[in-house]
Image 1 (tube, rainbow, N blue to C red):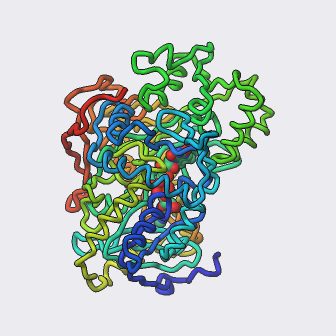
Image 2: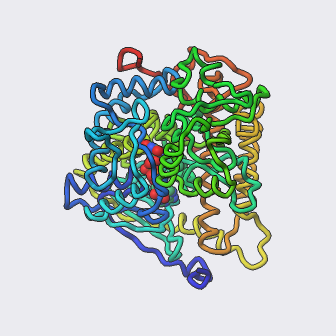
Image 3: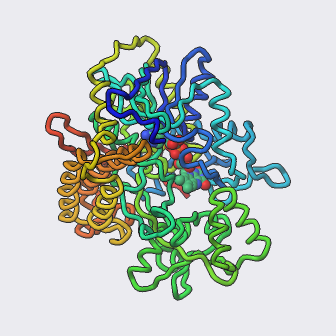
Length: 581
Ligand SMILES: Cc1cc2nc3c(=O)[nH]c(=O)nc-3n(C[C@H](O)[C@H](O)[C@H](O)COP(=O)(O)OP(=O)(O)OC[C@H]3O[C@@H](n4cnc5c(N)ncnc54)[C@H](O)[C@@H]3O)c2cc1C
């Protein structure tokens, strides 16, 4: 790789591409966006800018064993909105967005099946539900299936290009810029409309497995989704919503393997060290096994805190066939978990699977965090649309909902470009970004700076200890958040000292720079919500109760003049009447 590196910034080649619709991130939502654009107008030029390779990138890269939302016969999109509301503890959520997504949901999943995704059906050819809304699939090939369709429909795909910033014409987004992690070129994509679909943000917080010898650390999320899609909008002053609503998941201890597969799919109880069924014993008043998602995620950690850990997904009731089926499910989603169990010689019918809370993530396909968007999925930056994990206010999207939202964002984007002409390229902006992106590579021999890894470790520990990470059982308070914000600012002052030895290192440098921006916004949101609304996802030890005053959205935006993040609120409006049952 090193021999491709030019010796000086002036040697870096720039490639400029003009397109109608630019999609940053060819993941789940991105592929569906591209396909929808080509279906609606085969003449429209669609370009995907992808950090990895779209055949195996993003959240679906290792496969899935379920699609978490598919509306069953007899239920309506409105029912799904009510369920989503319950899962985030009664709101706030954008019911307008959630409903429009729900109306598109089944069609997107049906598309996947028609393209070759095996959905598990019973002997009467009926789709098999494993819970109230989620269906079983053999999804090891899920991502290649989506990617192949996007290419088949004629999207131009630029793989291994890391987006680093938006291309702006005044306040209007007219594309994006980034660099080739393999070819070392600087890329400028001019576009009439841009959809940001870069997935969520992981690695903001220290993982409790970061002392692992074999890997950097275990993470549940795709480790390359680091929040760049949020960061590029934060820097342009876009409005963000609900960034305090972090996603914390219950995962297998020390491995971050999925647990819904066992608890929902195989009806395993979540138990504590005494063998008590935690949800039934302590959360019956909130629905027990069907309590809101954050309660279920946080409950095992509360047991630890109360001295009743370790906690387990009880697999001891399973028979030989079920164990085999369970392993097949894992082979569809997280094959390495089967190896992990084998390497431990663990017979799960005798020894249950130990569970623990993950580090917190920002994922707007799961919770409500992300860009504030209108019904067309346009952000507050004209010309910039968001879909999937990047779009906020609309939780519980998962695979089907992210796909549906990709389609919706494309429809909005195509309307936007109808009468639009692209401005001339702003060369100053391009040169400035090129310098910012590549300068860590050209610090000169013997430069005594900061490596991406060092910066990352400092940031992750800071977030973990002060902004409610796993080691603190997700709790934080005003003073700790102030400390975190002060020290994040100090870290940001060190950005000029970051250096990279090769292009991969350069990617790591920009990942940590982006994470710092996202982390700062998360802390501001956590600080602004002066109550505890979603224990675990958002726990304030100094405001332990829910406050009705905060049944609203916490919003933020960078004031580009002062360089400070400003927060404010927006009211929550319940549009769909009634509760779920
Ligand atoms: C491990 C795991 C298991 C899950 N299990 C299920 C399940 O069983 N059922 C279910 O319904 N849902 C599940 N989900 C949720 C679901 O997969 C996601 O919500 C959804 O796929 C996200 O889609 P997305 O398009 O927003 O993001 P992704 O599909 O992650 O796409 C993001 C894309 O952006 C690219 N990218 C990132 N940064 C850049 C950059 N700087 N420049 C260019 N490209 C970039 C990435 O490489 C990726 O291709 C799971 C998620 C995870 C992580």
